[in-house]
Length: 378
Image (cartoon, rainbow, N blue to C red; front, top):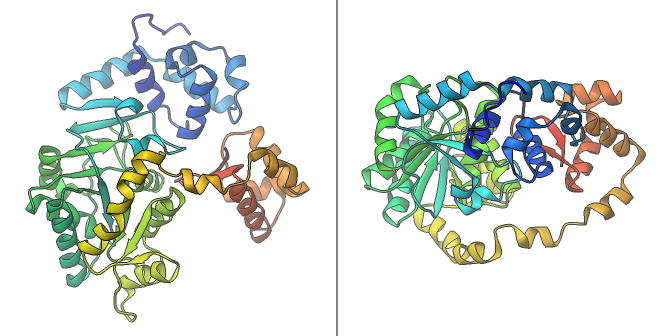
C-alpha cells in the first residue's frame, strides 16, 4: 500500500484500524489473530491474504485499504495531543474489559482511568424524583466504599450516578457513544469536565464521530463489560438501559435492579428484570453484599470460566446443527455481519423461524449478536 510508512509504530496501526468505518471489533480481532497480533502486518497485507480471514469481504478490504492514510493519522494524533487525550490499547485495559469477545482494540481516554472494582449504574433519561434520589444515593455510598462508578453520561439516571460519585469525592468514569470532542448531551459539558478531572471520560470512537442508534449500544457493552455488576435504577419496559442489562448478563456480570411501583411506567423495566432473575436491591449495601465475595474469585478465575465449563465444545455443536442452521453458517462464512432483515432475505425464512434458528446457533457458540443488533459468526 503506497501510503504506508515504515516509521509507524504498533499504536499507530491500532489507531488507524480503530477508525475504520464498518470494521467491527470481532472481525478486527480475527484479522489481528491471523497476523499474529501485528496491526502493521495487517495493514501491509495483500487483498488475497485479507480475504482468507473468515467474515472478511471486499467491503471490509476496501475500508482497510482506505484507512492507510498518513494525513488522517497525523491529524488524529494532532487532535489527541490538542485535547490532552491518551489512546490506550488492550494491555492497559482493566482485566474484565480485556476478556470481552468484542473488546475494542483501543480507547480514547480523557483523564486518568481509576482502578476498580467498577459498578455501573444506568437507567431512564426521564426518572422520577425517587429514581433521581436513589441513583445518586446508591452511587454516593458505593463510591465512599471504594467502588468506581461507571455510566454513560446521559440525561437522567446516568448523570445522577456520576454526580453521586462526585459528591462523595469518589471515582467515576463515563463511556461516550461519540468521539470525545462531541459532548452529548451538550448541557453536560460541566459534568464532562468534572468527570475527567476526578476520573476519566472514554470512547472507542475517533474524534468527530457523532452519536447515533448504533454507537449507543456499542457504548453500552463497555459500560457493562468493565464492571463487576450493573445496577438498573429506573427503566421503562423498552428502555435503553435494559440493553445494558442484557449485555451484562451475556457477559457474565451481576445484574441488580431497584424495584418500583407496579403502576409506574418508568419502573416496569426494573420490575421485569427482577422477575427474570436480576437481584433485587434496596440500597448500596445490598450491591456490596453480593459483589464483594466475588471480587477475589473473579481475579483468580479470569472472569467467566465457571460459565464456560458448562458450554458444549464447538465441535460438538457443529455436529448437532440442523440443515437450516448449516445454511445460515454458510452465509456468515461468505460475508461479514448481517441484520435480521438481511438474513431473512438470504435464508428466505420468516422472522419467527429465523429467530429460533439464530438462537440455537447463539447457544451453541457459533453466532453472536453484536451490540448494534447485527449478527456475525464467532
